[in-house]
Image (cartoon, rainbow, N blue to C red; front, side):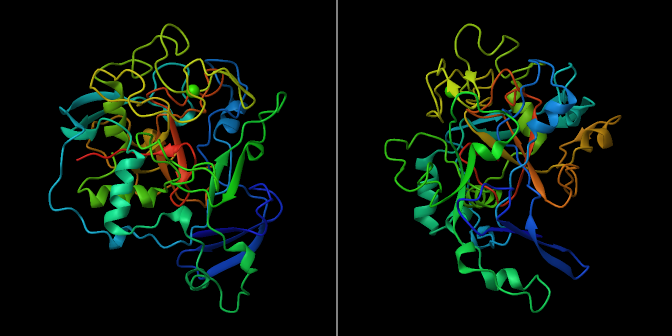
Length: 395
Ligand SMILES: [Ca+2]
């Protein structure tokens, strides 16, 4: 369990001004500390200026660059959500079960994408599109659900897991907020993602850019700023689940053994095939694909299974815990409907429990880590929502 609070909204995440507390489960230990330790993040894969198509070791570190998780202390509401009795398959596609080789077999993958290994999945239904603002609104209207980003951390909850007598931090730390992307001036370096990501008070699914922004006219855009808990709550309410990582990759491949959901053609050749970033990140977006931020779902062609935005637009939560060594651990045998590892481990941030996210986002760029490859894996702390992260459900 982990908590992280800010003492100033102006403090960039991961820098001085952050306070982190942590407790080792079962050890009854805990401490407050000023945080230099940044946290996880899928964040854009745009954090490295590696050689295109072949990220070097350095770039991989940048690519999985660190940003702080949120608070960890916010109690999930998903347990209070009633599971739907029946499931509507409207807007879903049936994927027949089968066997495939999961993971990368070329030289573009990051370490955690190897080795490629055999996986068998049973047939399942999957949403054709990312869950939209309109769909998420129905859920919120029906349940009164409040997302993680809308809730300030609750001291009464936090202190239960801290050593007795731990002093309460300043009230100014307990602020509801989420991570918002800010385009930067030309010449901005790529080594510090905290420059273009900032915790923003009042940013949430209804206010993607923070106070003053809204989702009017964006009913058909993917919902963002949703934590893994929020995504789980929505899926539960609709009688569905989050996809496992193997279901997600199987669906994204569309029956092919290609690099991308559309085949192998380079993303910036021919017609625009997905919403990503063209130009120089994080300063210049040429908008060649017509969208600077998120795009309405179904703005680009579907993959052979009829699924939209399996590459780009927004990252999508999966149900699996993230472990960097998971593929190594399951190689050499056929995995049947794998549910992922039993726990999470990210060597870059061993203390933070993370779930897998897939598919890349509107911030991914061909020059960097190519999060829109079908095998690309990223990971995020379960309580963290971002402007470029959403989800879809399966049944
Ligand atoms: Ca774009």
